[in-house]
Length: 248
Ligand SMILES: C[S@@+](CC[C@H](N)C(=O)[O-])C[C@H]1O[C@@H](n2cnc3c(N)ncnc32)[C@H](O)[C@@H]1O
Image (tube, rainbow, N blue to C red; front, side):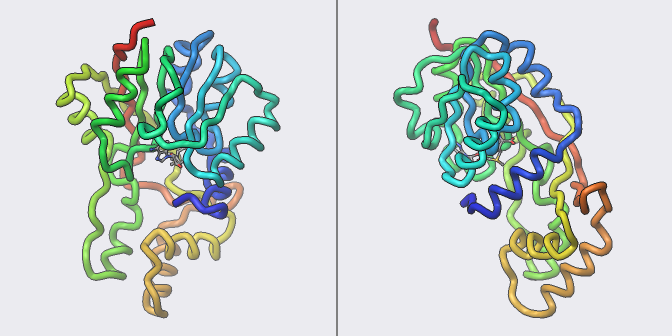
């Protein structure tokens, strides 16, 4: 799912983000001196600053391309208290053991079986679990383009309100706060924005699709210091947190 090209783009975008990150700010306080499990660290946007204050971090990441970026970023940062597990939560949870805190930022969109995923975090965490997802449609900026290309609406993705409802159905008394979300995509060039827009709208073929994408990008791309940004219609994310029930 995460190819090397896609993982590299995500890595660059993660480095380019400058927005305040309320989730990280909170984690830096509660995570000091703690053991932390991070599900889906990607290139390590949260992992590296957290590892600097935590006792240790276990980072579970199924994508080889993402693990490569993460390893390079950890080495460059000189961080040595992170163990990376090549695996997928909750299937590969055995052996992780109990942790003080768990973190899962922008991972849950493609997860089909959400209940075992959340129960696993609940059962293995002694203090608090933090989950972040977009509030509103992650692919929102491409919604009209997708419909014009394919003449049908794209199925909506789950968002943080779905997650909140599922958590409460499972009996987890989760709290909820809103936070700003970073630009949906950042591109170095217009050509790159076009290539990604076609990929993100599931690779339609033909000249008409490309013309639609060019017209859409001309209207929606915002120039930035290092290229162009595409922003969401609803630039918010939600942070959920609740107490785990693992015994120390
Ligand atoms: C959109 S990235 C988010 C990366 C990082 N958490 C961030 O917010 O910058 C999602 C990551 O979750 C990973 N992932 C997806 N499903 C997973 C699962 N079941 N267990 C662990 N990681 C998963 C993907 O490989 C990818 O690296």
